[in-house]
Image (cartoon, rainbow, N blue to C red; front, side, top):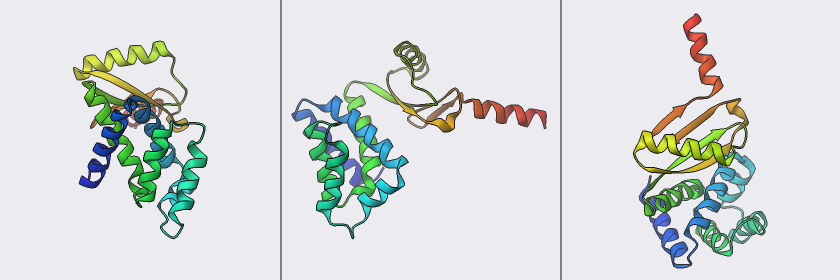
Length: 175
């Protein structure tokens, strides 16, 4: 992570904390970061410096108007206005990690083809807590490319229980 991204994340965490909305802002930034990564048109628009900053901020305002808190909207607008759109996903991830650290937790990004029930999330959280030795904040990303199963990343560790990986391993054994 670059010093710039880390600096922005530290500032955003401090601002969100001072507003008493760190958890909400972290969750909203996580969702925005995933949307930013998945949508080429959005990403291109937000990082294109030929497009006036006011227009890029307008895109963010339209996107987040009914979906995010005013605090999140203002923080993201500040990032875009400062010309740091290309760092948006990295900043969002760093904010999520710092928010989890403040609760003495680790963040687990779980990719699944379908949404998980609260019971499944609780069981997964317990299993990951046992594996990592920390309480784990689960962030679920719906990813149709997974086909089935889960791919979970906690820090630098990846637990790949996807159907695709299992099929690839079976194919290797049969070859």
